Length: 107
Image (cartoon, rainbow, N blue to C red):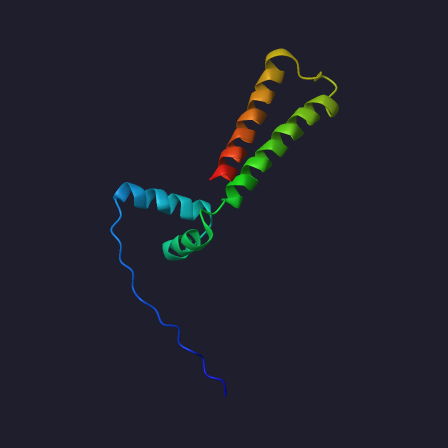
């Protein structure tokens, strides 16, 4: 019968300012880690993780914006192509979402 080898471990205790701990927890939750320890170990070993869930959310927002533009244009005869302020508003939403994706990727 094979025996499991024990991995030698040590306890690491660190003091962190409360505001820093809140930022770590917010990042951990956004990255969908269950424990702060797992998040911090992965961050230390692999660098700051890209929050794919956050990026996916922003990409989903882009899809919704594009779908609403297309639906207004194609599916409803009373809606003409977006023009003027409506077009500018849609473009601003798309740009804002693209900026959020870029910022998340830079982290």
